[in-house]
Amino acid sequence: MNCAISGEVPVEPVVSKKSGLLYEKRLIETHVSDFGKCPVTGEPHTIDDIVAVKTGKIVKPKPLHTASIPGLLGTFQTEWDGLMLSNFSLEQQLHTARQELSHALYQHDAACRVIARLKKERDEARQLLSEAERQLPAAPAVATENATLSNGKRAADGDDQGPDAKKMRLGISGEVITELTDCNAALSQQRKKRQIPPTLASVDALEKFTQLSSHPLHKTSKPGIFSMDILHSKDVIATGGIDTTAVLFDRPSGQILSTLTGHSKKVTSIKFVGDTDLVLTASSDKTVRIWGSSEDGSYACRHTLKDHSAEVRAVTVHATNKYFVSASLDSTWCFYDMSSGLCLAQVTDDSEKVDYTAAAFHPDGLILGTGTAQSIVKIWDVKSQANVAKFGGHTGEITSVSFSENGYFLATSALDGVRLWDLRKLKNFRTFEFPNANSVEFDHSGSYLGIAASDISCANSRTCADDKMIHTNNNTCAFQRFRVFQTASVKAEWNPVKTLPDLSGTGRATCVKFGPDAKYVAVGSMDRNLRIFGLPSNDSTEDSAQDS
Image (cartoon, rainbow, N blue to C red; front, side, top):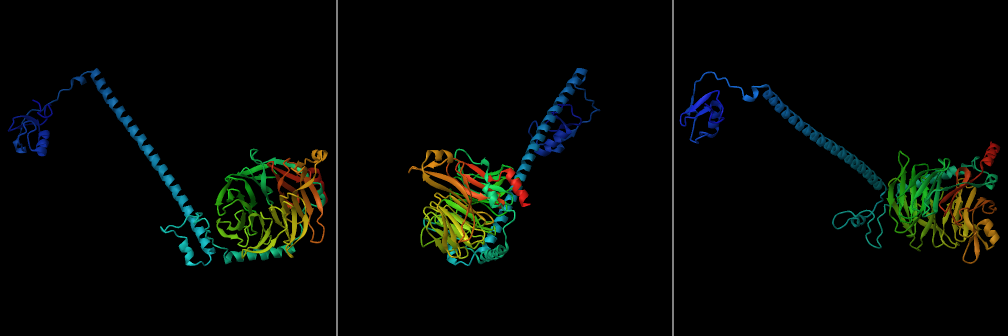
């Protein structure tokens, strides 16, 4: 007798009173309690309709496949296969779980990094805002209303409000002016006590200068070094090239420390910021960039300043190393805060329209000298941003300006040569008629003056061959030379010390700088090479022995 539900011999058999069918007790009770009817006939059914059947103890017969050794082996094989399949499924589930966990951990790490970066940017923005609020002078409420658009959003920085609209500037605050004035007083006091260092190269040493080395720092496709500066404390030379890059060159080792890329046009001016790790560059792409070094020695751009609307020709750093000025062909010069990159003031001369081509701070920091494309030199009071003096007399654009260390003299170079100006009497007291003067520079002590300019003479085949002259259209030749003069007073003669030819073959030396203690002179030219002129090693050793 078999169960009507399972088809097997029941362990506890029961019989239905209504249908007479045999069931396993536990199965029929479960079905009736769930559905209330017979599982076979479908008639209504209750527990009371079930009658237990009394039987003897039943011993279930063994299945036929377990009655032999091959059957047992088959059973074991089946169970083993099932176990392996189950194990494989578990391994797959474990692998999937591990992948999901790894992805979740990666997302968590990325989220933590984004949060940290946003917090850093938030803190920097708060710091810049606090600095701007400290420097912001009292302004009428109209300025705030004009800075807000009709939709309630603040105008983005650098967006033009119209073709003739001027951007809002914070202005040079009283706090900044006080800082500039204190710096001026301190430097003036130090200058009175300052003496020429004993380690300064002597006149005799400069007379023996010759080319020591030549370094091709920029690309051959766009050759030419347009600007240069020297960090005296580390003897590092920075050059700005026509190839849109700036190069930091370690002179003692002869190695390039870093190449600064980011400008889209030639680098017109480059300056170190004191002894810090900051470098300023100006470019024909209308921007000024502030670069800073990282732990690995490489340089990255920290700020890109887009306040000018035309080519930026010059940058100059204030003696505090906290502020700097940029001069542009858009007829304005800008006064910047170094740490934030904010333009505090953008100055233009409403009396006449001039394009600024050169700029330099006076050693004391309260006077700014600018050169223009209209052959005019302008002197500005930094505190009031007022033009306090104007020098004329040059022909062609002013290519460079340089103040002497004692603060009394200003040297300017232009197409017609170099002029020296007495700042106490505001007049020109000496002129060097060297055509095509591209650069003029006082050394750090104010003892020497360097000039990169040309000589013009009649064409002569023998002279041309000997001196590598460059022919002009009117059958004349131009000697491109670098000259060093010993500085003197207004009435005394400024004696020439050394004349060095331009060995580039391009006929144009674009920039000159004196090294520490005038021990060498660095010259940049249009053939992409940086040339170092100084004492040969033997002469240098003998001079050192004589000094000791």
